[in-house]
Length: 82
Image (cartoon, rainbow, N blue to C red):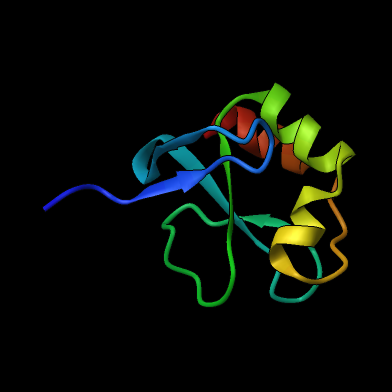
């Protein structure tokens, strides 16, 4: 059985799901989905600050999650710890 692939919304490259970090925004606030099991739509990004910032600058999280998304300031530090 092959491993699922996802596309990074920051750089646009495909990668195995295990190499990407999943974000969700069920209440409109973007948060890290560490277990990759939260219900609803998810947006995947490489665990690199450059991909996260590019996705945020291009409003890719809002587009992918199909809702307006607020990005908390502490999310960058969470990503760095991941």
